[in-house]
Length: 440
Image (cartoon, rainbow, N blue to C red; front, side, top):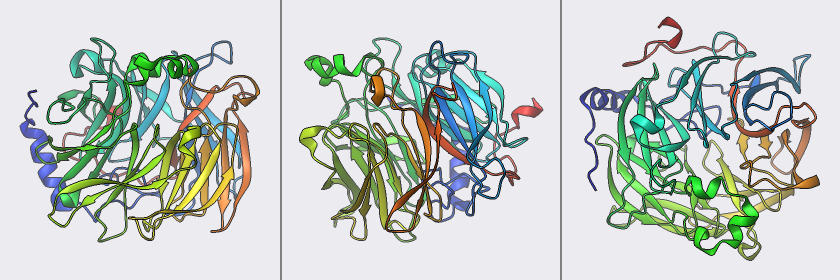
């Protein structure tokens, strides 16, 4: 397969970012891009939740919901804003631009990308642009991961418009929302072409990508999917090590069972990342071996794999010594001690809902947020179809629930991805190629 060469402007931007990057990331949510600035290290004021619309519930459309989460506020634990996008396209993930002015969010079904202004009035974000060329220009379907680059946004896809299978890639946009370049996932030398998450370690010139499944599977009813032996074979089983400066794949790592979220340790001096494989319920460590080669190693088991707990989201602590893991099927939130990343140990677990998906902790580790929805056709049925945002306090020993927002009761839909916000954000100056959208 031909891997498109990086364009000159992108190469310049990447070269510059290597000169100014601080040691990996210092972020309010530890999963953010290391290039994102204006970070929240104290109390967050808002949590923005990208929410799937439900037919017949409210306006039925996907929307960005904003909740006040500052205990000092009179509106603590209350919905203070929501902006509908006027469509229902399987809302899933989102990400800030490097200057933190804008939040990009995507639909896995319709492949639309929505850009929200979250700086002008953080409590009431505003939809300012809809990008519709992810499939036509990028050549991919299902925009999933939105990863900030200097003046740009790297968007990872889950599928393609030709056969709606798992072979996919990434599209690069500038902060204005203009398409720049595309980068295909490898299908040779062990590559299966699948994509999912993106995580960068700029100090090592390394980007890692993981793998999931295509549109044909993630838009199928979960019960039907599990019974379809052919469909169950169509899941990714690899991670790819990329040369970041060149945006070229260098090595394919075998990681069976759909490795999902990737988290680099943020502790200075650490050069390893961790992921969880959904179908095999394992934690995998990615680090260099004694010969200086990147390797992936199975280092821990999450729950009982025979019961398919289905680990979904993970959140690493700022010191790299702990990891939260949510398992969807059994509604459990687990904490693993990563003091020795070669041998993680589960030290805590709590049933936090009939189904749980995303988990985001504050930078200081004292607050843990959990949402419930996975995919519209994969969520549980009946009474087990809970849809919520929950805030827990963590004292190092116990999770204590502080509030719960029932998204069905509020007629908002299915709560999925979260990002934190500040009442008075200190937005950064726009970097290379990034003209504020509002100025266009």
